Length: 224
Ligand SMILES: *Cc1c(COP(=O)(O)O)cnc(C)c1O
Image 1 (cartoon, rainbow, N blue to C red):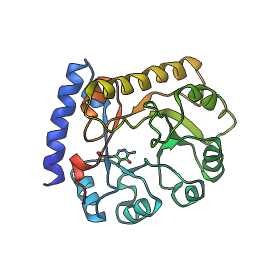
Image 2: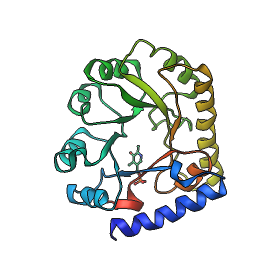
Image 3: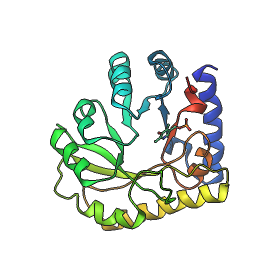
Image 4: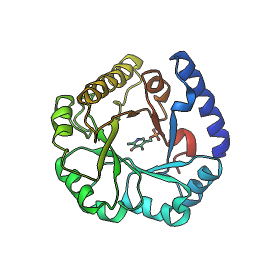
């Protein structure tokens, strides 16, 4: 399938989900997750009009960046090893997986400008999922006040692997609830206006629950 065909279908789904939720479809940004696919396929996504690309490894990001460069806005979406920060920090605009102070410290130290970071939250409590426990989120964000190059633009989560729509919905709803708590702190470095949630299988529910950035791999660019 061409990326443009997949994109057309996904855009319709976004529109319908947004309308169901009384939201403006333009408030939802699609990030094409290109971690499974070739540099050529990633470029096809850009040519289809997707401006935001997501990668979860430094090798993948650097390879695709070499080909695509500043034609895309780059998102780092996976668990980030502290020692890999240096090799991607000048290329990425968003890091979706801030989950510890040592990582914040390294990002702050290496960045030459403010970096938009999402705090990753393990809403579902699954062992295998990365991210902070929900009740760690507020103390963590408060602890970041001294880092000049870190801007907490939002919260991110990965829903559990399940077909159960109620479970998915409650996971996304909880993230949106925590976003409100963060916003209520009114910290200048943590406007927390974004919610990064929803993947190929669950993005429509995520949109109904307030997602502003959805991260789509399989349904958009495919798996290889
Ligand atoms: C791989 C990945 C995605 C995309 O997953 P699909 O199910 O292929 O859409 C989204 N977010 C994160 C953090 C990922 O690692």
